[in-house]
Image (cartoon, rainbow, N blue to C red; front, side, top):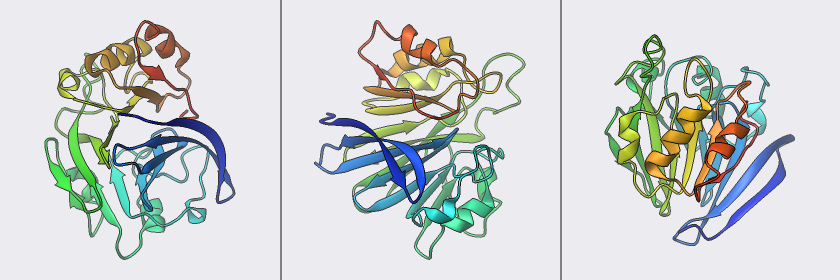
Length: 238
């Protein structure tokens, strides 16, 4: 159960990122920072987690000002999600890099996870790799089925679903007990607002962040879900 929802602006190492703070079932806090597009920073129990960190995708982000990562997740190899130079910037000796098979080929040391894989870290963190792909006719080539990952991060019992680049695929109906979800909303590569709303209704997260949305009017997602109990939050994920 989510016990706390706090939203604030924070200055993180000279950069302003919106932050949402949640309390996990084990009583520890989970801070999620909206960096941009598909990139986010998550802090749990002193652990630094970076998702699809990319420095030069606009607006540029100076990752040298952020703490080194304990865990880095890469969903797929497109330039707006995979930046080997930024991964190197965030890496320390003990950093665990997890990537889908194609992305992992670009690194000397990476743990490969494919759709359906489960990995348990210490400190109450587990990771599940789930499908992410296109289904709209004529769009299947952008993210073919079986290649890319979404991830479910479980942090002290708090379940965070990071979709990666996907559409409203049937596998979303299999997601259970999702507390916080990130769904991509931009055409032609991911979802329309209508698809995102339909996807959210398939698994009913407590909190939904539309992300990776470019110029899409994501307020439409909030409107389309106004008849549900889903808390839709709009952050700076252009």
